[in-house]
Length: 417
Image (cartoon, rainbow, N blue to C red; front, side):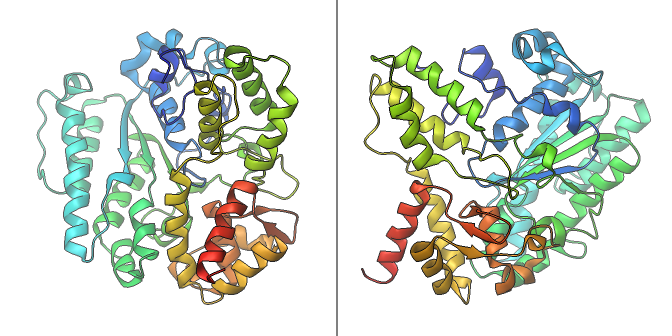
């Protein structure tokens, strides 16, 4: 690949993106609105820019990144309008996508504690992080994540240290895999009672209540796990369908068209080709509406893939319009469709008519694992996964040609056509 290509495909580190001169679509105005919440949860389909947004928040609030504020946020909305909260906290960041599903509770618990405990140890001991605040500190139990987090919170309270800002990316990744591989009994064990996951979120809830934790921001895909954790984490504030946050992730038409003009000017050999590229982009990538009548939103990762390939090809449209990771996502959806008792009817309806009836109240409904297997809620589950989008107030559809081609391929494979 050319060394000077500045299309940030698959880059999830905000500092790398900014310091290496990659193209950036500024979403930082939403930071101001997010500060009104202590336990926000934001759900979007996979590869929708959640990890980059988590990284953006980490650099904005991290007390260790104060001297980099102008470099990282100069020229952005929040750089010109910073809040009083910037660079005031110790940032504790977790990536739950690295947690591995298993066939038994003990293996899940061991994997969770191993991964999370390692992060907590590094948090207090790494000189590049916050070791200066924990010189006389020791954990009471270095093998139990909830106890270790509780120890950190007690130390912060006792020494009046900067509060925590917690970020949990893909909070439901491993639990969703349990659900879509028919391990719902194991899922129930993990998300109820005094399980390792519930205990961990109970500690976070306590820290929020005692203001040792300023904010805990979670991203995910499905609302199921968060609702099943209600007894231990009933402070969660789901912002997914709030109108003021609909465009916090993804690119609207104005952002995408500005991005395209940048790509054409920098990498296109012909300069007057905007319309002939914009039309196939609309057909292949457009279409996500997260509320009826809302502006359509592009998946930012998939669109950046197209722009990157356009740049690599010196201004020519790529022969392959979608990246291979979409097929990996579809494999996961296939497993879910096999669980759905009316999966065939859903596939037929989407492929033949590109229409799937739904009730808008179901999108706001409280979901537990039983609802995942209730045919009434299948359209809502497909919506959260990004398989479908809202056509109007009564029907869903496939969002674009890319998803339609993939679905038709699955349809032909399943029925040997």
